[in-house]
Length: 572
Ligand code: C2O
Ligand code: CU
Image (cartoon, rainbow, N blue to C red):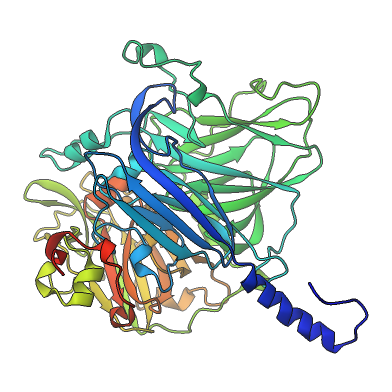
C-alpha cells in the first residue's frame, strides 16, 4: 500500500478505493496441467483401476483467492474413454462453456485431446470438482477447490481460526463403474449396492482384506495409510469438509470435539454447534473445532452412512495433538464413533432447518417468484427398466450439448417439448407404492425468462418397494439458490409457501430432499447459459433424476470451438 499514516480523513476513503484496486490488481492466474489416466490404486488397500489426475486420486486441491482465474488444461489419456470435468459450486458467470457438463455445456474430451477450462472463482468458500461424464465420478476423478476470501474484503470470514484442514469424503466400490452402469441399465435392474469402503482424503480400509482376491489386498499399502490431522493444543481449526460420494449420505464426527458450523456451500452460516455433521453428496461445510482435549492421546475422525441401512464399516482418520507423548499414527484407545441412528430422519431434518445465513451476510431473496415448478420425484418402470422420473419424465442426456444446440438453433438435437411444470399434487399419495404409468423418457428442457425468479419444490415419494423413500441431494449448476423451506409429508402450494423463510435463508448449491419430504428453493435466472439440476447420487442421475434449465442463451458470448465436435455440432 502506498498510503502513509497520519494523512487525514480523506485518505480513509482513498484507502478503501486503493484496497479494492489492489485486490483487482493482485488477482492471480493459476495454471494447471492435468493428465487424466487409469492407474492401479489401492485407496482402501484393495487394488483397483482408478481414474487419476497426474497419477493421483483424489486430485490435487485447487487453491486460489477470490477473484483469481483458474486455468486447467485437461489432457485425456484414458485411451478408451471420454472425459469432462465439472467445477462444482463455481457459477461460471460469463463462461458457461467451462461448466464441464458433458451433453449440457460441452462435447466430451476425446481420448488424446486436451481441453482447457478457464474460469474465475468469484466467491470465497469450499467447493469441489469431479468428472461429469457417465458415472466416471465414481472411478476416482474428484478433488477440492478452496477459495480464500480477499483480505479485508466484505466477504472476509466472520469468525477466527488459527489453522485449517481439508477433508474430502467419498464412498468406494470394488466393481468398476462399467459394471455398475451396465447393471443399472439392465432388466432386471442390477443395483450398485452399498460401497465396500468409506474414504477420507482418498484413504480407507477394506475390513475383509483376507477375503479379497489373492494378492489384491495389502493392509500395509502406503496408499491406504490412515490420514492424520495434526493440531496444536489450545488452537482453533477450520475443517473444510466436502462430500463427493456416489451414493452415501454421511455423518461426520471428530471424537470429543464439538463442531461449530460456519460455512455451507460457500456461504457463511449463522453458527450452530453439533456433535456430528450430516453431509450429503455435493455439499461442503466448514466447521470450527477447538483443540482443547487431553493432548496425550489421539482421537477418531469418523464417517458413517446415514439414510440408507449401512452395509459399510465406519471410515476413519486420526486427529493428533502435537505432543511428545503420542505417536501421531497410534490408534485412539476408543472405538470409532458410529454416528446417529441411520434412519433417524428427524435428526437430519433438524440440521437442515438450522442452517440459515449468518446475520452479517444475509442476502435477502426476492419476495416472490415469477414461476413455480413442482417436481415429484418417483421411481418408475419404463419398458421394464427401473428409472427415476420427475413428474413422470425420466431425463436422458442428448448427444448434442444443449448450449451449442441452442446457440446454433439446432432444433432437431433434442425434444422441443418442455417437460411438465407440476403434477396432480393434491391427489398424489406419496406414501403408497404407485405404478406411475405412462412415464416417458425425454431430453426436453425448461426455458426460463432471463432475470426471472424461479421457485422449485422437490417432492419426495415412495419408491417402487413398499415403505421406502430415500434422501436425494439436488444440485444446481450455475447458481446458488435460497433454501426457503423443508417439510415432511405432502407439499401443498396453498399452504406451505406462507411458512417460507424469506428473512435469512441460506444460499446453497446442493440441498437434501428428505424421505417423504419436500424442499422449496428459489433462484434468479440471471446467468446466461444452460444448466443442469439433478440428484447428486451418481446412479440416480444416470437413471434419469435430473432436469436442465436454459436462460438468456442469446446473451452467451461466442462459444469456443473446442466444446463442439459431437452429435449435431459436427461441421458447425
Ligand atoms: Cu457435482 Cu452436476 O454435479
Ligand atoms: Cu437421488
